[in-house]
Length: 115
Length: 113
Image 1 (cartoon, each protein chain N blue to C red):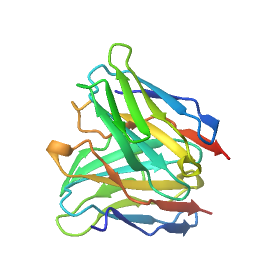
Image 2 (image 1 turned 90 degrees about the horizontal axis):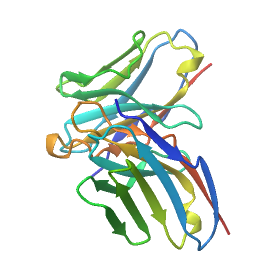
Image 3 (image 1 turned 45 degrees about the vertical axis):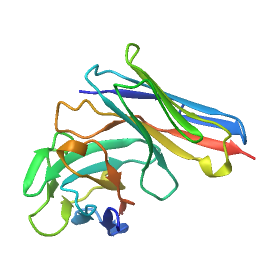
Image 4 (image 1 turned 180 degrees about the vertical axis):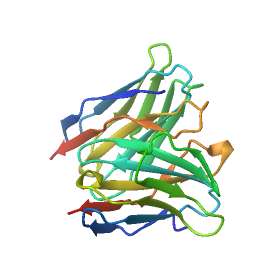
């Protein structure tokens, strides 16, 4: 069991470019969560998705950020026109479904640096 | 929504001593409280969790206690070892909504040799 796989592990972008972060959940897990962690801070919820469906995006900034979890392939967190304040570690977590919806397994994270 | 407060932000203990980290939550509907350990450069790893129908849970050197009336829960690590050095996060889950866990801001635990 490979666990939750995130890539890239490190990503460097210049201001104005786009960042795409990918997350493959654990085998058998159908729920994906994205969290953002700023240096020396805790994890902030961004979005919760199931296949082809955004369940809760209350933590997502209103502009430039979007997330998807297609029927096939990984979940993707997309940040358009990145700014320096987007520099952070972005963690993906997955859970098995309704019965264990709150037991989250995290990936190793993607660290975005905006120059 | 849920609000989770965690204290202290930094805790330094001598190797072999015990460490206690405390969290409070605001939503009385919360029913699940996990603790995660995050080592430098890695993702958070679940180390223990407790549900609202029990008051205490133990797993070797780690224990968690929950006081539903006071809305607080604590992590206890006994006989601390150097490999316990990490950042520990508590979290709460209300279960009623579809949003994820709400995390505390973390405690940086330092084990002094």
